[in-house]
Length: 514
Ligand code: MV4
Image (tube, rainbow, N blue to C red; front, side, top):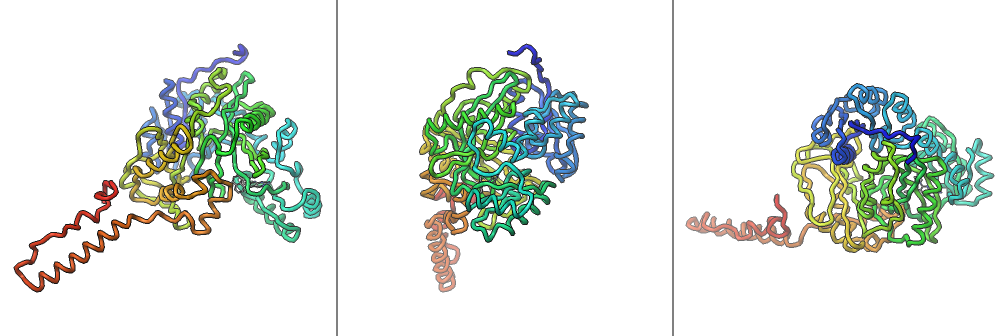
């Protein structure tokens, strides 16, 4: 321990988030013996996080900008209630350098990296420069903004088509344009600049060589305030729909121990280059030839952190709390090799077979899967109202197995147990994915899900043919009975269909509510 870094014991922490991640943090706080407080907006008053926290405070109406994004009000609330620290979760204020700075100024610990690290990683060209300088491979391309179309044309000639234009303030695909040929460059340059300006209030763009059919592989890192940085292995997040992750797993089906060592080393170098502390993720594109390139760094705890927890046995929120209190990372964080395999599916309140339209409403019936190797991180319960105001992710279902095959088998079993009624969810899509040869074989890339959906693959599993047969048989018998009844009044009402129960889903498939 570095004695110049004071140990700050947290007695109470304010969770500045909602849904499953607020619940996740509250659980860690209780395990650590730290009092939890949570903020909530009007529609979240009966949220699971409010039920589980020791204290809950209304922060405002539904709209995020009037509630969960009210940085100064949240910091003042933390002071009023005597919270030592704020955990921002992910989204909302988690990667807002101004907010983390305000926390520190007002004497409330921000459970995350320094505001300087957040700001540096928020600039794509600044982070590229710094990280390339640290000897980490970055996607080939520029590290300067392209001020004119002429500069863009000249640079594309230099690096060769196809190229990608990206917003320097970007991330998440906004202000990004793929340009396959010289013809498309001028239009794409203008479009990228105007979209970047509208999205980030900063219209500067730069250019990279386009990497074809890559995988998205990211490395979890932790840094303490004593200069130690560790990498906890990778997550494969290639199954995405329009930049929205859908399935994640660890380890990646294609990362060998040697590649893991290289990627982890690169991630540690990237984190060190900004003096990174707390939990973070270094994202890479892994091309089909096995080359990897730094893409960006996420300066927060990520949605998919549980797959890393399942294969390392660590508790990442506990680690975050320890780091923020000034503790040094112990030996348990070193030289980790993944134990077994974990897969996470994100359950969204969206209809995957109607363009993923949001599906708000009341969860009328809910049965979570349980049993060996199953973890469920949910923000809802039976009776919850799913509102349209926030991210539609309801829960994450995470399974662990000795190897990828057992994890897949457990995922199939868990999905068979799972029932959510009252709203549409992405659950049927996962059942279909488990029938997909490419998914099962781990043949993934970042465009795969969109291609398969566009091609009409991954259609919903048809319900059992037995059910159809039972319905047909029952109808025939009903008609026969009617015919008999009208022919001879003595028999009327005398017979009941033997098919009455056979058509019920529960008699065939174990469904409890038919
Ligand atoms: C790329 C790329 C291919 N080549 N850059 C998308 C989000 C943004 N943060 C970076 N993205 C990409 N950058 C080069 N030079 C492909 C993507 C990309 C992607 C990356 C990660 C995960 C999913 C993705 C889906 C589409 C495109």
